[in-house]
Amino acid sequence: MSTFKLLVAEHFTGEIWRMEVDYVTHTLLAEIRNTEDRAVSFASINLDSGKTNFKNYTIDEKWLTGIETAYNGVLLLHFYESTASPAHKGLTAIEAATGKLLWYNFNLTFDNLSSNGPIAFDSRFQPATYSLLNINNGAALRKFDSNVDLVVDNQIIVPQTIPMPANLPKLPSESYHNNVHYLEYNNWIIVSLHSLWAGQLKQSLYLVKDGVLIFEDILNTNIQKLQPEAFVLYRNQLIYLKDKVEIKVLNLS
Image 1: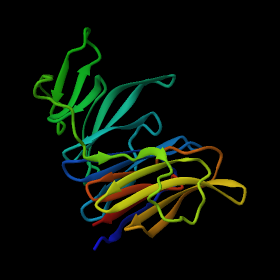
Image 2 (image 1 turned 90 degrees about the horizontal axis):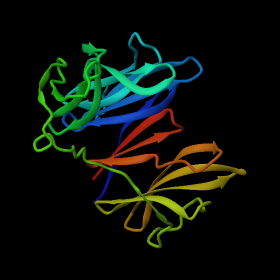
Image 3 (image 1 turned 90 degrees about the vertical axis):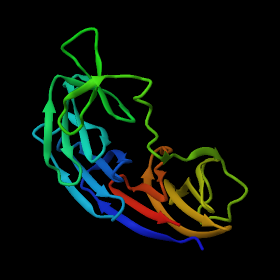
């Protein structure tokens, strides 16, 4: 019998700007931005236990920083070349379970996350030489090798955008737009759609099993335009955002 359980319901004071999953330690990392205060903070959630390792975590740079990647228990943050440039420059590494500062290097620029760890280059030297980093101390281990430093499979599945399928039961909301976000997993159908409510757009999430509506939640209300997909599946866990300020995780089985 398929069941679900609410594992995480964590609320934040700013908008959740970005999320990354460390597929090695099964840790969810989030970047939260408060545009009025021009402040950014970070959070870490253990997806095995549902425990929040930390939230409202800040570093000395209060705004011009953000999540770059997460790997093997380490959250990697980036800085920016300048206030007027979107280009990234500089890295800071934080222990994802505790928030402990591990290292920082203002000359390194992140390129990609490989199956063996982060690939970066020293921006002081041209042409750029790409190296595999030790994520625990920032040291260059060796030159990047595309034959062994492979593209990462982070086990995250994103929904498809498809026309409203015929295999859904009648849902409480009539779709405002023909396209919905749709994903199937282990006899579950997960779908989000936009509908009109009191003259305003809202975005809702539905879980359907064996043709029966099992669970629903409102993702966004009083929105001005169609929103991007607001959920992903990681292993057997449905991860989604509510009102852009709350992370929810449901265990599906």
